[in-house]
Image 1 (cartoon, rainbow, N blue to C red):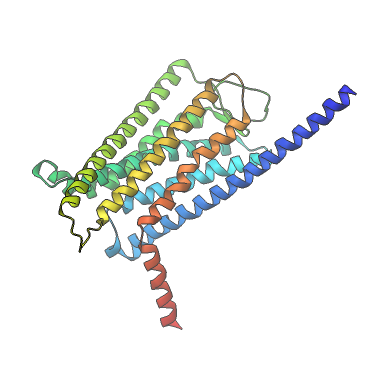
Image 2 (cartoon, helix red, strand yellow):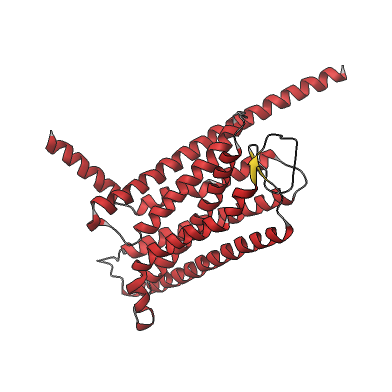
Length: 325
């Protein structure tokens, strides 16, 4: 009788786990699809503006184009494998596919950090008070954007090249090893010296860009507070002051920075706990996958609040179709 009750209880628990994983897979699919469409729409807008409407191009479009591209690739290579795993599809994949997927995940995550930091720094320089001290930077920052982004891609690809050598397909789910481990791929243990150099390089890079992001954010908050105090003194009851486009864009960037820092540290904490923990908790891996795709999903929705060219582009296309007909 006890054996039958235990078997029945385990069967119920198994159905509960399957239902929970399926529900999570549906939620993650909705999140991934929404984020991918939003980033793809913005990336297409920036590319269309760059090639077809150069007069409408903004200085920050180059940064945002790379940010949306990195977000879309993160959602594709991070979200889709987690969705497949949640629905219980355990198809074997080759070592090459694992290397490409995991390498792309790491590089795009690094580019997302780099471009968000670069965007916050660019916005801080844009709204800075004019003066001789910062005049040269304000005049030349637009020409420095593209070389900086290109350097960021190259550096990230070189740093994470070690993943290509160590990543293999996971064909035995019961073989738990130290290091990164997922339902499809795993990373074999590094040599101690190589691991120390790799982790130190990644840590130094992340801390540097996070510090740059934090400093530029504090500066922007200071400038906005100062402007708010001045505007409150000169505000007229008949002609109330309105926020300038630069200040609106600054609020958008600050919102993105807050979201990025929150999800970055949450994802890093869960990843560290998974790496150094003795037991593998697949539910925690699913939560980590969800958190790591939150920022790429929220980012285009926030950017669209400050993007009026989408409605203008739709208006132009509708006018063109009416004219053709």
